[in-house]
Image 1 (cartoon, rainbow, N blue to C red):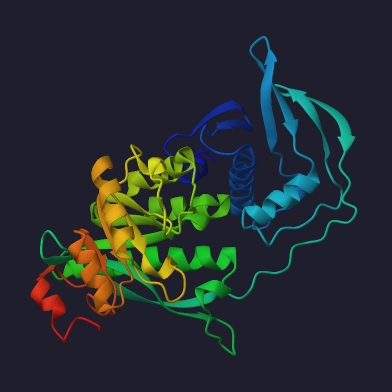
Image 2: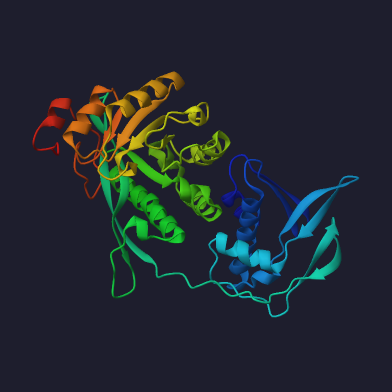
Length: 376
């Protein structure tokens, strides 16, 4: 149980053992519903590790409150809530109980059964769509101050269904669970290639993107944290995480929580800002290395505008942060970004993606503008 809790909880979270079968979990910067999801997932994983299957109706998750006299009141969640939380936790292969357990309030370890939850109208969730087959590509990231390609960003090249007949999928077609699967595949696939490169005596930095939606969901955060903890510490000094698709008006506490979730597992954490943003207070003082824009997030047909680049650089300087722009496609937007002194640039206008990351290499502005590399 404690191993599972360490895998699922973040750096600011805490757990303590109450008795032989009960643990108290507190997650100060997480919504109460998300805490319930995390606890359910831990209990489910423990249960299935011993028995191979799990009757979710028999998992006991309680909310804890102060009962006075150094006692805790534990209020078990009803079965219908457990079933609802299971879907949010990414649990699909569970069994509904034949004899639903009683629920009620207990003080410390004394159970007072009061009510019985009804399962009328509850249906098992739809089965998960078939697993995906994901191939990857590595996008060179140009460090303008260093005149060098220092980082390769791992991203999905092709996403297909695993079962025949195979179908190509776009990111917009992915369900939440499939998107988690795709982003985890980039983490694992990128680190595997980074390890291969290291065996050849070469080194580079590996860029890993994780969307705000995935990292902000209970299931996505748990899966991503578990994956990061499974990685060898040897590679953490080479990982640069970027939180993408950050919505406009994001709360600073929310963004800080996600940033702190990733910081122990990599060299740095950066985050995108929503196109046309004018307010950057949420990004200040939370441990980010850089803020940036992705042309992919801009409205169709609208590329990077000069004023957006200038606003980004001005805000970043005030907060002592770096700047980046990704998915640059056109030469004119590339020139706009370069003139605004953006520090890290990537996309077809810089260099085409490759199947494997390469060692760090020199790249000058003159070479970027040449016909062999720049995309007009």
